[in-house]
Length: 195
Image: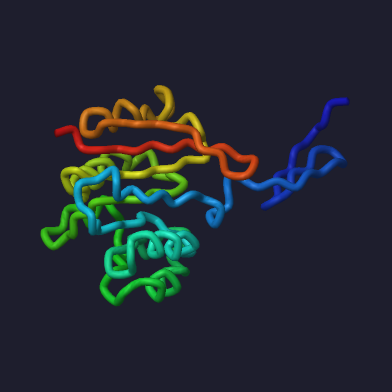
């Protein structure tokens, strides 16, 4: 039997008369926050989470790296900006940066970080080059960037849509893996400066 229509609702897919519960990707609270201290040269690292959304992972990051070392960055105009006050309340007073990474990285007063977390990579194709340059600018030598993507192969093979590997490769060493959380897999990439 061929179905004539597919309707996608927020957490449900309906095909013809049948429906299934579904969700896109992995719930943030189930994401793994690794302790990357052994992988970097600074034993008391400054840590940034780019795009913390609702702030779900910040308590895990703070538990590992201490409140005084953790920062978060999220623009005012993004999908989750209504949560900026919630995220700000999880951090020390001046540790929330309400700006985009690509803009903040061009400021003379910008802070450099030893560890940068980006969970669920979702960068618009129009700003990818500026975003990668921002990462290069904000990461201290000897630091590491930890990125996850629900699109498992985003960093594992050349992507004809965005060519992320080719865009990142000139600036960073790339280490990729697949991690499993519950029954879901997600792609992980760790980036370090090419020295």
